[in-house]
Amino acid sequence: MRGTFKQVSLARRLVIDLMHASVPLVIVKRAMKLDRLVQARARLAARPGWTPIVAKAFCLVARDEPWLRTFYLTWPWPHFYEVPRSVAMAAIIRDSFDKESPVLLNIGSADEMPLAEVDAILQRGKNAPLADVPALRRVLRVTGLPLPLRRLIWWFGLNHGRQRANNFGTFAITSLATLGSETMVLNAPGPSMITYGMLKPDNTMELLLHWDHRIYDGVLACRALQRLEDVMNGEIADELLAGAKP
View 1 (cartoon, rainbow, N blue to C red):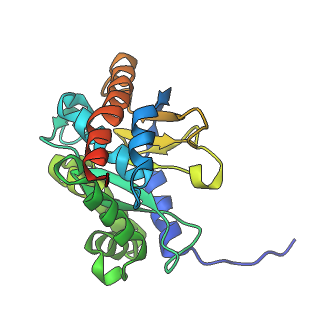
View 2 (cartoon, rainbow, N blue to C red):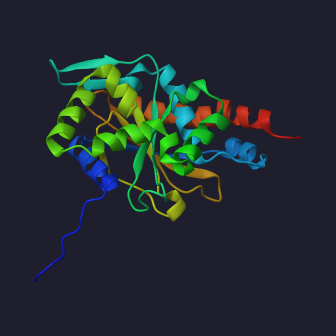
């Protein structure tokens, strides 16, 4: 059967590079009961998306859990590398670039910003001209390089602690909830990946933490999800209520 050659798009090439650098992740799931957060969010005229909320909440949790901001590096010898603060990444789709391939946007240390600013960074990454989003422009510039050079740059970035935090973040968030689906299993470079499902009528949401088992164990993962639920109903809900009009 004669087929047709198709060129690999730049965004799809980025996904292929990401899969090449990935490690198997272990998964733990928790059904979050988010009554107070949902009520606080409903009082806002302009409601932040769930990705900014989860990003800031996880950064707050990681302040007290250093293993959530620790990498496993293999060069020059296998070792752990802890960074002082979290850096959130989010998978986004840019309609003006490639509607079917996600790219990772560097949000930064979400716990050091107001929630509205975190949401604005995400929206700017999705909709602003590529020239106005330096983090994406840099990643796509690397993705356009020849394969051997890309592999070398990725290897260095993933094995240099400071550069890994700057370029790949300490955790990433992705979700298909707006499409009515949920990612159950995925691979990523680690150390942590978060996915979440749709908000249900009883104000519950299933959230999955995919983590690198070489760094920490299920006890910490479960504790992190419990703490994440508390923060979302606590500090995050408080911030939303403070910004709501009477």
